[in-house]
Length: 302
Image 1 (cartoon, rainbow, N blue to C red):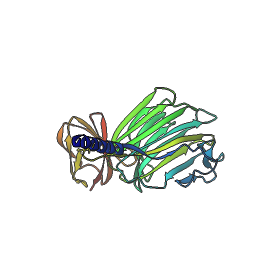
Image 2 (tube, one colour; image 1 turned 90 degrees about the vertical axis):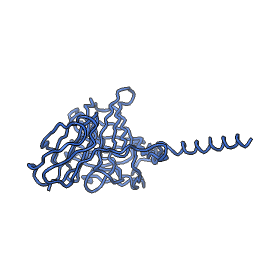
Image 3 (cartoon, rainbow, N blue to C red; image 1 turned 180 degrees about the vertical axis):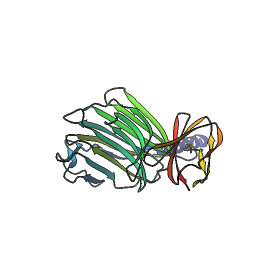
């Protein structure tokens, strides 16, 4: 009898651990409420101030000012999410009088005053991508694919950040057409999250709905997030840069902060040395592509 009770206690204890592990919803908003402002969970910034952003017919509708060619907006969640693993998702639809009207839409995370990670949909390049943007608006793409976007179709986006691993799932709703992107980045470390949009023409209207924020909780003895073992040093560097932890051959690219490719190298496994004497002083983005993953590092050249 005692053995039976002990086994039952162990079973329920394990069940409790499993119940606390995995993805848990922090916020789900289907916007099924009265037309108007988004509510107290959000901080909204729009430019120009004459554009409108609010709930219309149980979804969020963003309409630019007809007199302005460009419009920008951001919807931030008021609370920081203080965990390394977070997943953002929503559905998106765009409508315009002309197929040549352009827009960008992004789920953004780890936002700070310098950089933030974005899962972006861009009609101008007909693409979805995982990118890093700095505070000057310069964007570095970590991974991207052609999306074959069409007006008035509905798309589902799911942006997952687990440690340094980033992934984007992009699906045309009602079909099995799915794009999956993977990348790695360790430059963005803050906890703020938001949704961003940019309209390049006054007739472009964006709609989003079913906004969801999830966090991943786990028992550290059962699930551990694998940390990136590739390192660059010294950093700051003067004349030589060492890259260690490469398991396979890697393509290494140096970019300026405005996204211009400066130089490229092909490295073998193990630890490799790169002569950077000819690089001008300043900051660079170093992208290391190996084994179907892209790892992004920030380098300061003295």
